[in-house]
Amino acid sequence: MDVFSDLIRGVRAHGSLFGSSTLSPPWALHFVDGAPLTLCTVLTGAGWIVPEHRPPEPLRARETIVVRGPATFTFVDEVGTRAEPIACGEHCATPEQGGTRHRRGWADHGDAGDGHDHGATTLIVGAYPVRGEISRRLLDALPVVLRVDAGGTADAVLDHLAAEVGVDTPGQQVVLDRLLDWMLVCTLREWFDRPGGGPPAWWAAQRDPVVGDALRLLHAEPAAPWTVASLAERTGVSRSTLAKRFTDLVGEPPLTYLTRWRMTLAADLLVERESATVADIARTVGYADPFGFSAAFKRVRGANPSEFRRTATTASPAAGRHVALPTRTARTARTARTARTARTAEQG
Image (tube, rainbow, N blue to C red):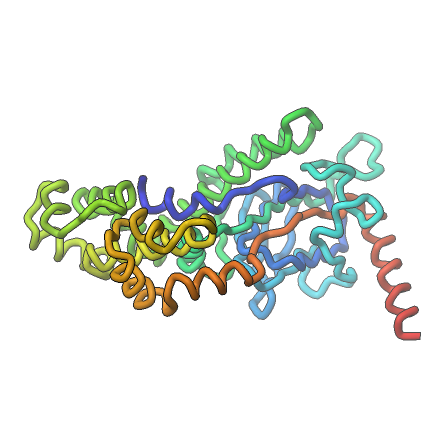
């Protein structure tokens, strides 16, 4: 298992986390759920992503922008649009709120006679829940907004997405979920590899013939009784060579990295396995002594395992909710009028 595969495994599209809409200007869609990660891509046309407390970002045909939560953002036809923002989130998932007729991907071309609105923008949005501390390490490596231009490896995925949202067939949700996962992986790969970029240290280190092998071993066998000497033997270099090379590329010594990774795994296990004791979790991540494990956990995580479990299980999980988009400009206008009427009544 490589580092990237391990970190992204908890970032998965699942169920009603997909929306596709064909929009005619003016429009302003305010995505209010604050999902940990939201992927936005335009199949045709163009618009602007306006993140909360950040400058607007243009989004042109076949470009992709990923927004990291919990901040919200708006998709508009132009900066300063006259359109009144429409809140898009789980409550948009019913037709009367301008959403999909069924909680799956959809395409709706309004009332155009030929089924196409040639002046419209077709937006695809996928919101990703993030499960646990493992994937949190991936989020921490990302900026609030990242963009990937057209013409990369994600273009092929876009072609599949465009074909799938245009039909309504059994199994569509599964296909859309997997296509969104594929799209996110391609987008992040290209962003990490962009010229002049600043990817996390582990990204470049994975490609080093020595350190990359060491990282794969640590992630494949985190509970093994690793020492620098045993890790060096498995990677075919001297102990001093591995220690220096690993520290230079990753930014910390191999066993320090291993301890932090074990504590990340343990943090998720403490929440996922409610019936497991601290000693059980300790053995799972490579500690025979639960007291030694507890000391290491508190040093790395700032709380002992029992305190962490108690806090984590009572806190509200940060997960993406359903994403749905208004499917017709007429519906958008109706929803805006309804919202204005409701506000007027409340103020009166």
